Length: 364
Image (cartoon, rainbow, N blue to C red; front, side, top):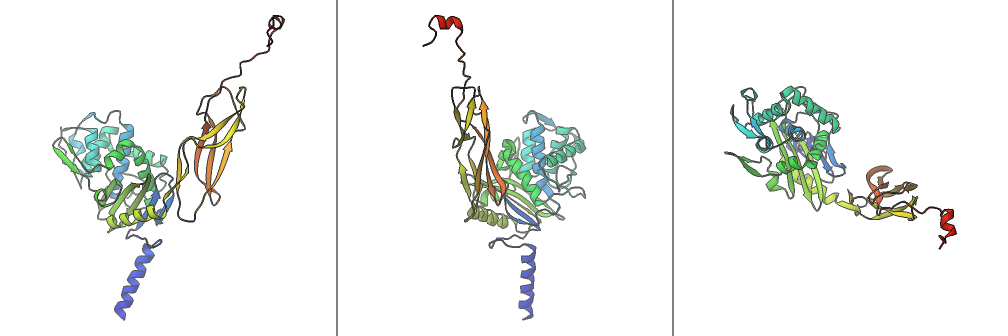
């Protein structure tokens, strides 16, 4: 009886630490599942607590470097003072020549801390200056509970983030074509080196498109992943999770099954019309500027509201802004899209006939 009580107590403690949602939970200290397009949170546990994030840091390192770089294929000459970082390495040597793109593959696939330092110092001139760029980018992305002290993710009192903030970073990385492409690469050969992605989910999880693993003894196992199925992309983050591969697969399956993306409108759908001033055309159709969707579970619905300009002055071209459509859930806007003019309109160039035209039969 005492053994049964102890087992039950242990189970209750685990459930309290990682509360399940519809039977879904994790072994993580912090976790979140987010819709990549809308940012809707589909599952979370302690998602705003600041924690060590280890090498998932390198997603931000890559994003900053790619945005700052003029040419990813430029040659980087490795300097001796960039070397000597502890932890994982791609074994760079002083004086070696490698492209910035090659370093990014070593950074994100092999998780090289020497690659992180080389990327940082080449991009900004020094580690400190690059870290400043990292923190500025984090602030821009709304990562309010994050601070970065180095480009690799080594333990530091001033280096931390949250599951929620890392999901925001993941969404930004997915929107960057170069970073998202590298994260999704399973293996690549750069010069004499072959890098194999540490992210086993690329082989284990349907539709996985990256993103980054991490580990230190203090941080535990950290993982940021993303998967795309049927046109919907989900982001998953776990911090300090001893069973992260399985937890991510289960959370992603849960998200796609429970919150499938519902199409709200197609690009070009007519959602109203706007009066036209100064033209022979009395009004113009207001159409959706793009397709729009949102993740909804069974039984949920959104209310659509169309907000149109009272009129539009000619001349204008097709695609001119004329308003927006918004979708609300429980009174809060969760999706919106610009509405544009389906067609253009020219000025009404007719002018009153002058006296000479009238005398000579100008009226017809």
